Image (cartoon, rainbow, N blue to C red; front, top):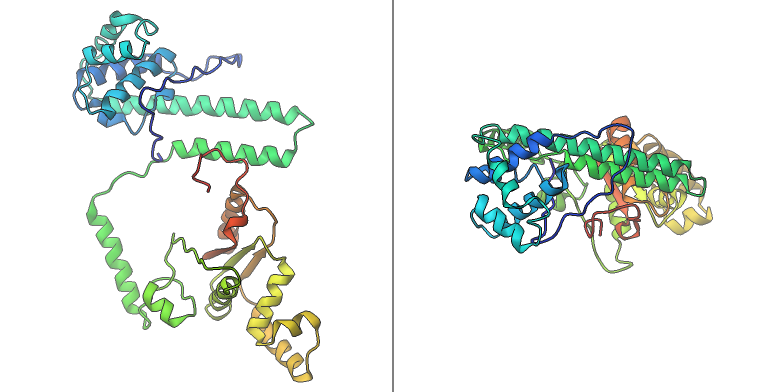
Length: 352
């Protein structure tokens, strides 16, 4: 499960509008009561489930309010028990709304210990995700019937919302250091076995590769400089080296140039012919021979180009996954990042 969004202190959960789907939505009311009760009777119970549940994970709105009050106390590192939770709800003006002190006391009587609280919390989280999927699919279905809505925009919205839901079900947990050391040691052995000492993809620039040990898996490399300083020329040279010399599949997304413009620059680079001559076609006889001879290297290279304008983050993700799945692409180049479109995203500033 991805890192949970922090619930702001003293923020009231939003009551979701009830939607009648003709069936009872997935829920686990009894487990919600058990989990809330366990948190208030066991000192460390909240820490066990704080990364699993959020206030909106609870089906019952009053349980959302109670869990939000518990979260307030945890953020301030204050004790969590029947008395403190009751007082926090009173401060928030929500005590009567949840049923008063009597209901809080009732919850604590629902459980004897927090022995299975993580298991119970995961069931609650799964029920929440199921409800989110129901709401999501219902919304998309309704929008799909509206002929005034652009289908491409709807598909982009659907992908974005589904991605957000799926992220809630992913968890990157801590791990004991032993297997990590084993993995790191294995990578060192593989690098040592290579004469050049590189453990990643060669860029073709020897001095750079010595510093980086090659581009590593999951690396994000941003090449920044003032305009007209040669950023595109640099990345195209790297792409040429990786795909043509080292035969590793490369994908280039060009948001500024067309595929033909991009390939013309690659041809100029590979064939060592000035770009002006490539554009004009005014080549000397020996240059045509040079072009015919060296162009085969580029034609046979595992290089893939895409010049989709205003490419969105989600379109890029979809295309990138297909390129990796179908062509085993090892590195993806975007020229340039600032031209990407973030429409359809709902993650605040993260896409920026």
